[in-house]
Image 1: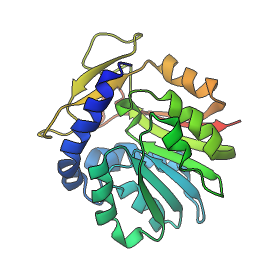
Image 2: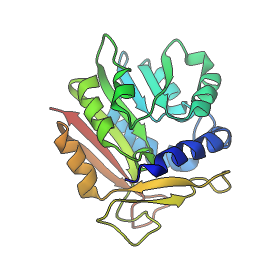
Image 3: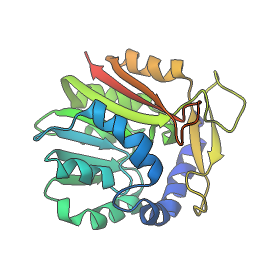
Image 4: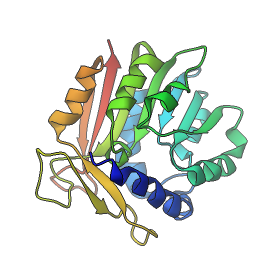
Length: 230
């Protein structure tokens, strides 16, 4: 992906952070509640005592959801403003959640999240398509997760959700996640082949997969994937 779009992506999310926090609130929007979370919850299977890494956590409302179910959570986002808002919104859970400003494209920054205990699970809700380079993330997760640990992620369906006519070629384009957000931000398109190849090349196998749609359309809007460290 084009390196020059990365800084612009961070700038856009800094500008959109407060708008996003106000819109998503504590429970997220209808799309997340009805389409994203049910399959994420099924594949992640949160247990008491889980140690979970929340990748690109936004305002931390899913981190709080996991903390309510007695998981211990480390959550990060590359937007400093978003993390400030997450800490404020999730103040009552700060004994169960650690928030950090971390860039998911930097292996050095990601590995700074290493703790005495390995994570047994990681999760990302609708952020893979916002990350300019996902290779460092999967490389780092292979080191951060325990053996047989899982990473569950939901992202736009690359076959059906794009504003361009290109599929096989990786590319970026500007889009709007929520109507009226202050700035458009970059989406990073990858084919299914590209996404799965990154998983396989960095020591993961896929053992859970769903395609889900919003409001009963025939074409799915998202994929939800569970990969397992081997």
